[in-house]
Image (tube, rainbow, N blue to C red; front, side, top):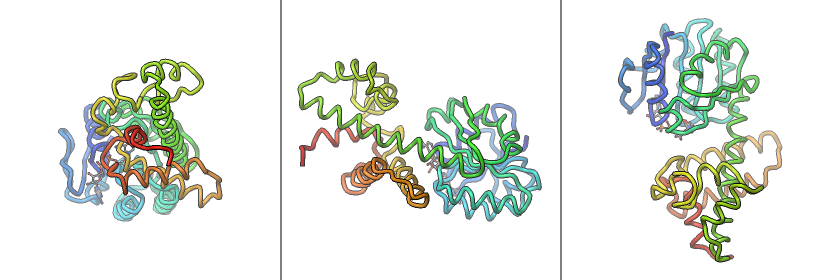
Amino acid sequence: MKIGFIGLGNMGAPMAANLTAAGHEVTGFDLTAPCPEGVTKAETAADVAKGADVVITMLPNGAILRSVADEVLPLMAEGSVLCDCSTVDVESARAVADKANQTGVLAIDAPVSGGIGGAAAGTLTFMAGGSDEAFAKVDPLFDIMGQKAVHCGASGAGQAAKICNNMILGVTMIATCEAFALADKLGLDRQKMFDVVSTSSGYSWTMNAYCPAPGVGPQSPADNDYKPGFASDLMLKDLRLSQQAAEAADADTPMGQIATALYEQFVEKENGAGTDFSAMLPRFEKRGRK
Ligand code: NAD
């Protein structure tokens, strides 16, 4: 397959590299990042689009996705697929799909879970929104870049799933961190806390697989001085998307709202930017009731 890849940052570069390693012809474009080995460098996004069976985008946000889509869609062949793997707002995903459909291009929103490690190892989870035809065309590529792809529904459904998943993630990380900080103050040993909670009804991915307490549980960013991993700023971005979606859909999400406010404070007022999102634990450690 001839694949175009736009956005070769932390996630895009290893994803593109896995596609070339599997024998696909990949042409890539990024404003600043270099092309990984095996990917042919294009000078513009438009050059990537010409002749491509599939164009994959892995970009920072919805506004950038919309402008890149405006540039590439007119050049893409009828029946080819624009597959956006970035995490963006549901509205942008649907707007891009509408534009694509007008020009006979198939569109799919397919954000991912699994982080930089999953991108490098080819073990991402894809959550996809779009037609059956579009999904069928890109599913073999999801198999290369990931371990699981769920077709969630029509355009926007992938982003909806991603936003809901990450709202749960933000809320549970905060709950796990505040519980550790409370346990400390109650004199409970952290390893004992982990041993109990990870096998009791308080268990979660944030406790069991990504424990925010250093030296406890499997290796996680907490064991590496809270270097990301998944940065607090990205968590804040996704929580904001969840609240934007909740506002638009008139959904009551009080826990999501509190998690957004806490990460906002952490990132913007407490130097949390650039630290892993599990660094909420040292934040709580320093705080009292007020
Ligand atoms: P990144 O900042 O490392 O990469 C984004 C790349 O897009 C950059 O290299 C940038 O130069 C490029 N870019 C920006 N505007 C462009 C344009 N107009 N044309 C071409 N290239 C352009 O970010 P990332 O960590 O790779 O994340 C990409 C997306 O994946 C984001 O939407 C993020 O929310 C999502 N995501 C990230 C992770 C993670 O752990 N990093 C996990 C899941 C999802």
